[in-house]
Image 1 (spheres, rainbow, N blue to C red):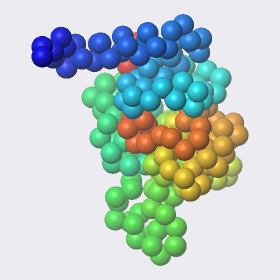
Image 2 (image 1 turned 90 degrees about the horizontal axis):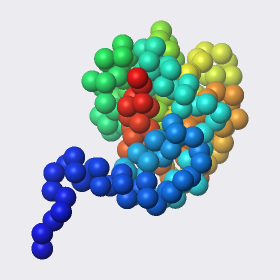
Image 3 (image 1 turned 180 degrees about the vertical axis):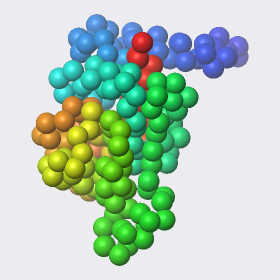
Length: 207
């Protein structure tokens, strides 16, 4: 059997052609469509056509924040690894994840809370414009919502795509009511790979 597509670039190009053909002329705006295409490319899951929710101008606001040097905070090292940090740093930004920091683990154990919630608190002390990309821990979104209400942080964008069953749907709904621009995978689906894919889709649209 001969394989028509053998190089990584040709495979990726053909994958996006297939995705675009199946999406057809979906009318969600060009920026949102680019994000949706990259999420589907990452997951091979067309359910995101219905599940991925965007607040008004969220993608444009995220692109603008990145253009102006915003930093990205992730809730897992897997998401951190997936973000294109070379492109991000070229724009003056950087990526952070505090989940494995020894102080975070110690505080979480002493207080009886998740490391993800403590990691969010630490991230909120950063003196940069921030984009939060949460793909695993709903408690990160819950604590982030609390910090927003306390005016301890004002994110430029929240990417809320944790995967799972416990507190996941409720945490995403909090973010969609927070008043902060958001890109959220409604329901139970998501993941660190999805969070990174959305970050990269935004980065690749910065001119």
